[in-house]
Image 1: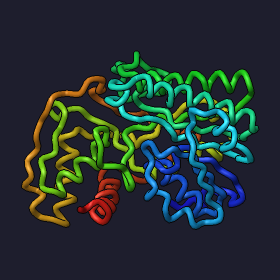
Image 2: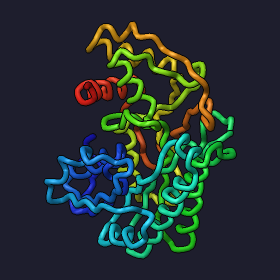
Image 3: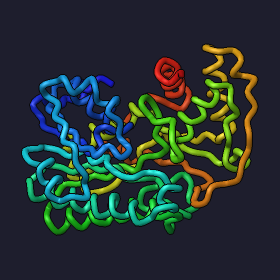
Image 4: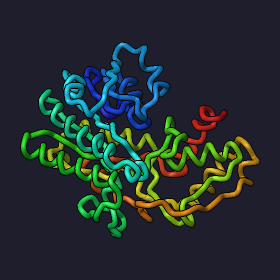
Length: 333
């Protein structure tokens, strides 16, 4: 990701919340390479020290260990910052179903703390991670930003509330906010472990160990899988947007194509088998469908293209090839 082409001024000071997480650490790395000053706020509930270890030696990187559920910590994190890229959250639909209270505390109360702190510290713009889960039970395809359904999980509710709060803060306090509805992001540093691991790194590690990946349902559910570099591009474009029409709204962050889970496993087997030929013979297991799962997800990215100049560089195949190469190098036991 060549950020120089976006004309990011190296002297910018940028706070990345959840900066030790999968998406957050990739954002930190990209911004540091451009010479910006980056502050990372993380409580390491889901973030990993290893994600930011190489950055700790850099003079223009500052780690603040703390929790967004504490307003004083949020105020300290926002102090002196030009922009906030708010990635901190408790992800996962199943996690929110198992523990809706903690998901709400982090994703709603924590989000509100960050908005208040950004307002008080006069941050120029607040860009935040929204979610495709906001579309809920809407059957509209592709998903267009101004048509949503009813949420299907506590997680989806929290992410929709984020959008409502951002809109109110923009109208009431004159803040500049942009929400980015991520669609199934994947790529380097995504955690393959734990009960709430994302499907791609989980399948990859199972296949590398010659274990059968378990698909929830019959494999027909489809997603608009989005490679991490496309997400980095959208955060940068949202941060630098000068068109007033592009502000105080939400955007889909996706590639604009969908892949079902059967196809996904087939592609992973194909790409991984170039490293280990036995992987192509690993069988797939089909299990019960998960509660709260949306059957199909496909984004319209027209709004992002028209207002932000978004031009995703990686489709599912090129993104998976990049990701598989990283997984093979870093995730083998």
